[in-house]
Image (cartoon, rainbow, N blue to C red):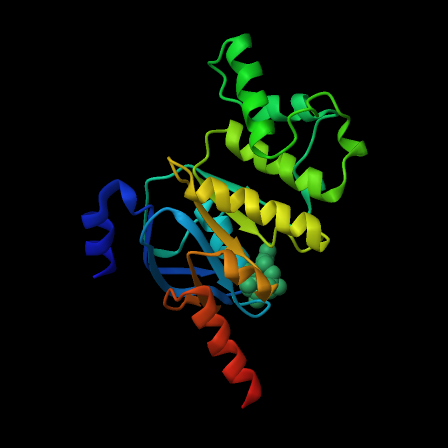
Length: 232
Ligand SMILES: Nc1ncnc2c1ncn2[C@@H]1O[C@H](COP(=O)(O)OP(=O)(O)OP(=O)(O)O)[C@@H](O)[C@H]1O
Ligand SMILES: [Mg+2]
C-alpha cells in the first residue's frame, strides 16, 4: 500500500520504508518493522520518547548503519545534521569548511559561487572568511545547513538541530529549513524534535514509539493528541 503510494508519486515521493528492522549487537531492537512513506517534499517532524529509535533511523537513512531486514527506497541524497554543530564543522573558516562538502568536479569560479549562494540562503552572506570559533551557536548551525546545500543534498536529516539554541536562533533555523522545503524546487527535511512548539512549522508529524513510526498527522493534530494523553 505504502509502496504503491511511493511508486505512484514517482519523483515527488522521496522516501519509502517497508518493515525495516535493526538490532544492536546485544540483540536489543532499535527499529522493529518500521514502515512509512514520505508523501512529498516538505518539512516532516518526528517526535518520540528518549530511546524510541529516532536517531538510529537517521543513521540508517544516512548509510551509517545497515538494516537487518526490510526495504528502503529513496530517491534523494541525504545529509545528517547533529544537535551540536561543533561535531561537524572541521576547518577554520566558513568558506574553507564549506569547501569540504563541495562536489570535486567544479571550477574555482563555480566553487566560489556555490559557497556564496549557500551562505546567502542561510543569511550569512558576509561571513565567508569568518573564523568558525567566532560564530554563535545559531550561526554555526546555519553554516552546517549551508554545508548540506553545497553538498547537493536534498534530504536533510536534522537530529534535534535546535536543542542547544535560544528561541531567536531556533526560529531562524526553523524558518530557513521551512523556506528550503517550500521553495520552487523544494527539498525534503526530516526533523527530530522534543520542542513541541516547533510542530507548528511542519507539513506533517509522526510519533516514533518502540522503533516504529506512526501515521503522519498535521502538527496541530499531533499536538492535540499528545495534550489529551497528558491530561488523562
Ligand atoms: N551504539 C549503540 N549501541 C547499542 N545500543 C545503542 C547504540 N546507540 C543507541 N542504542 C540504543 O538504541 C535505542 C534507540 O536509541 P536512539 O538513539 O535511536 O533513540 P532516540 O529516539 O534518538 O532517543 P533520544 O530522544 O534520547 O535522542 C536505545 O535503546 C539506545 O540505547
Ligand atoms: Mg536521538
